Image (tube, rainbow, N blue to C red):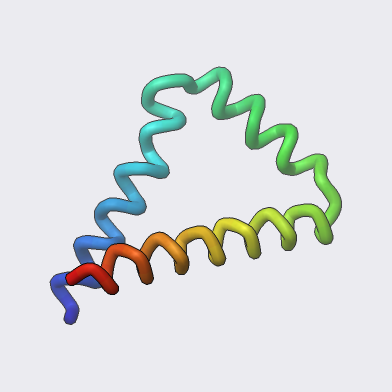
Length: 64
């Protein structure tokens, strides 16, 4: 179980690091635009990401 957790954390860090590594200007612009959004919009975006991640994880683990 802990190996799976740390693998997931590592993959998240890799994916999160790709933006600033490959396109630092675009990443900075995206972060700037996100910081100008109101709290409700950010919550909706976060909720959508959590649901999408949950669906992907469910689909991947249900096939094992």
